[in-house]
Image (cartoon, rainbow, N blue to C red; front, top):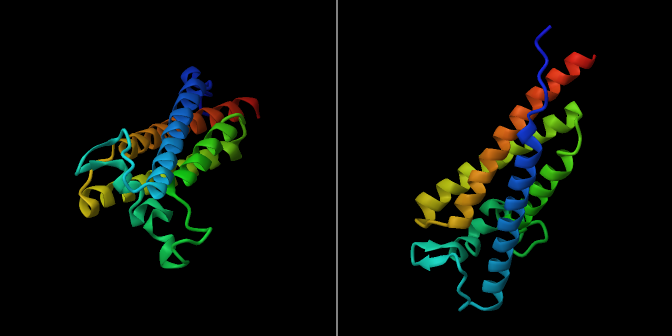
Length: 167
């Protein structure tokens, strides 16, 4: 039998900090997008120049449904939500599932983190190669997503070790 591990002591604090940071970034992104839609002259704090503009990114085609949903439904469809709304749901899920020590919750955390990292890589490539922009809020969420993946992988390994020790 493999040596059982304890839950990393830093994991709970790291998850709370990362998920809260992700939530704050996502809520701010939603605020910027909605403010820009109401007022095209709105200038967000993260708009530092022509090629450093988060509002330009958030209001682009790729700011909703990863730019993919509108290929299948109307641009203004209820299914074509801002990416920030998806982020709010993801970070809430990370906090909620983080309360459980079950193997299923640990697996769901890891799988959802892999999806978020894949989305981050996709959106980062759009940011760099299609939009030619730098978005501090976007890059910050990518970092949070990678950090949550690391945290979730460590958590899953520890939970599997605890379950082996118990059962």
